[in-house]
Amino acid sequence: MRYKWRTGQWAFVLHRVSGLALSVYLVMHLYVVSSLYQPENFNKVMAFLNQPLFKLLEIGLLGAVIYHSLNGIRVGLIDFANGTAKHALIFWVLMAIGAVIFIAGAIPFLHHGGVL
Figure: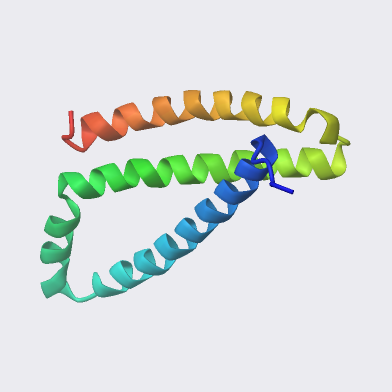
């Protein structure tokens, strides 16, 4: 029997991937912040992190946080509000809301970060 990948399975996998990515980011963030305590490193680290690539990665971070949090709300609704029958609809409604939030957050990132 072949398994069919539907909305719920994709949501599950993407939730795990975004959670893993956020965990990796947290470790890297703590490492970078700990290196900023040395005054001689501050300017070098800030210049390195001010590159356009890192601005785009910050936008990716925004997307991961939005997806992970909204999908967590979806999981809570499925578990505690009897949303199993409508899980796909809940997913797409929350992803539409997430897209609006992402666009509203990414535009200032792009303008302020000098990418646009």
